[in-house]
Amino acid sequence: MTVTTLNNNYKEIITSRRSVRVYDPAVKISREEMTEILEEATLAPSSVNLQPWRFLVVDSPEGKSKLEELAPGNKTQVTTSSAVIAVFADMKAFENADEIMGTAVEKGYLPQEIKDQMMANYTDLFGRIPAQAFREMILIDSGLVSMQLMLSARAHGYDTNPIGGYDKSRIADAFGMEKERYVPVMLISVGKAAKEARRTTRLPIDRIAQWK
Image (cartoon, rainbow, N blue to C red):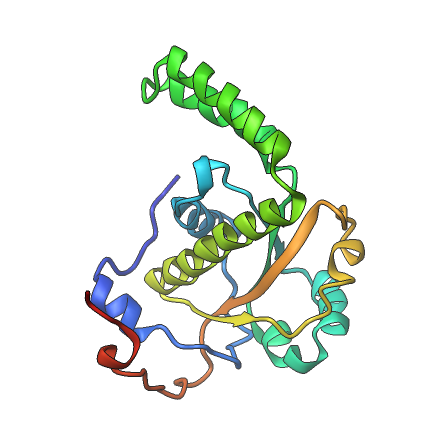
């Protein structure tokens, strides 16, 4: 796949990222480039590399119309962005563990005997872990991929806005997904800012960090 990243300057990427609420509706991100952005995002770490995140990329008029009903307080982001990515955490993510580790064996990253031992250990662990504990784990992992997605989009020259204000109880059903399996994490609008976003400030490090 062709790499279209526009900026490899990490400092510039993190300092130029803003939460953008109004986008240029004429700017459309191709599905090829969106796939690149998602591939880069999924290099984020996750617990035992389960990669529990799942993405619903809403870029069609029909999809956006559904999303407008679920996020009326964030209608502008939905209607003007190139796409809105709904990030979910998969409660059945462990079903992919054997495939993930098997691919690592095929590529020479992991010895077969280590893979077998890891699978045995994790099968036992995730067979005993309470559902709520697993849910909390995959929500953290999905938060990591969400931040990386926003930085990847910025490296491609696009702007984003993480959105928590939407009907999480209905979104899976609305898009034909298993409600009990897929846990809503956030929406991320992606596009090109129609105007420069307002700058914000941060608390100083000596207020939020300690050294012991």
